[in-house]
Length: 213
Image (cartoon, rainbow, N blue to C red; front, side, top):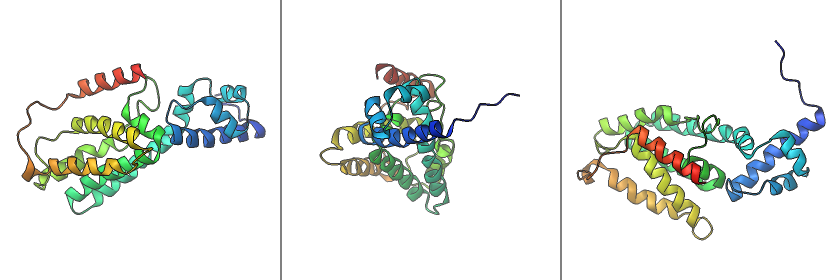
């Protein structure tokens, strides 16, 4: 079977420089950052960038799975916490800390990418979400009607808070999350007026958001 030919040493160095620059620029400016700035920071031509990454999506797919791997680690810490509520709350706090520190990641988690994207198919951390929520419910600390799909609406909302306040009050999202977590405590719960979104509805809303981006 014929494998992929290895890059020449200079080409490999250029690709590595582009990945480092893309991580920095997307982290600072979000997913709409100009590719020209990435090429400038990597000290290569825009043509070299396109030779390695023909589309913006290809560049996203090269860097964000590694960034999203952090969700696996925070999920593991949440499940290892002997207090299920602390595990659940800590999971959310660490999740949104990641988003606040990386504007590109904030954009990534706020919307679904087109079908076929490595980012769109990435379920980092989410495979453990049912267990994290289930433990907190079983302990009697998390309101019984909170569903995994409700996290999607929280991510959309918090992403917007992070995006709009990052230049003025970068810690504002912590206050917002604190209010939200207090509302999720079982002793504070009142019946919700409407049910949680279905998984299909979450996908439809997220896809519509990606299409508008």
